[in-house]
Length: 204
Image (cartoon, rainbow, N blue to C red):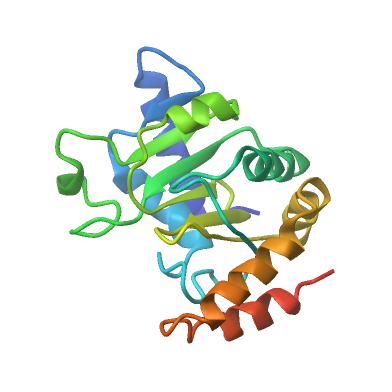
């Protein structure tokens, strides 16, 4: 069951979307403040080099490498499989690398930092003008993906969501192995062992 805060945020967001003139599979969210409760239901931080998820997020895996600040087509298709498994038809994308912090309307200025997505195709997804670290996340608080500037992503969600992602994306074990090998050889890789252990606890 959604919390009152999430329900209120979704109601405000739906009103915003009804006011938008041209509905497409991807549309800009003009007031990012309506997204903050949805983000906070999934993420405890925007740091993809640690433990960014809320304690209620039960399972975690990694994607590596990604396509710069976007998922590869296979990774994105797996996320869509997870979304459909939950019966959802919408998610959000937000830049997480912002000087003032996420969801401050003063930050964006002339450009857009947040988008509402109605299960866009991969071609539509990669056409979104994402140029910084960013996140994909659900309206229900069930899952989220953080993409880093080091071309990896951390994905967390419910058992049903992550199970559907794993079923669609069989390379997830290889991705985690490659990510661990890279960061174990990196002087700034002190975060990786705890992350691998976290993934291992949810390896079903």
